[in-house]
Image (cartoon, rainbow, N blue to C red; front, side, top):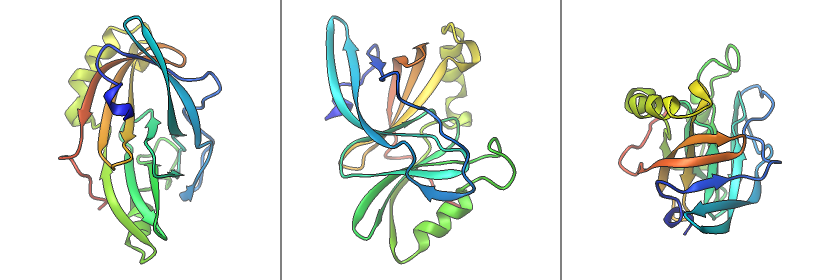
Length: 193
């Protein structure tokens, strides 16, 4: 399992071709730039590659990856990671929240309606980063990063067994991140209201 390889002190290196954010959408379910990739994991002197299904943040969208495998997304600053089924197929989505993509582009109400449809079954929703919960840790990470206020990058990971995790990292390069904390979010389910 990928989560067993990701722990404090490990460096995660994404391919330079990976996009962490896509073009703005107009409140819709989509699958934009969601792709499998080889994530390089550096643990002390040991370097390994692990296959991960990755999807970027899509402002104004519910960007999903349809797979039964592990799924990772980021950067999270308040968005929700949602796991649900459509026609018996599992989707893991990065659900945009907030107003940073422009007015009327928050997807919380849209997602609530989507998973309420008979064709959709909600499995789990969680916030990989919650300002009220994580601001102290994030601030400390930013202070120790040469990227300043952009130095804390939070990834969400949903395992093949649907366990949700937050991965708080310190940015050390454009596509390179030092893991500062891994948090099991199983007890912190999020409800769309």
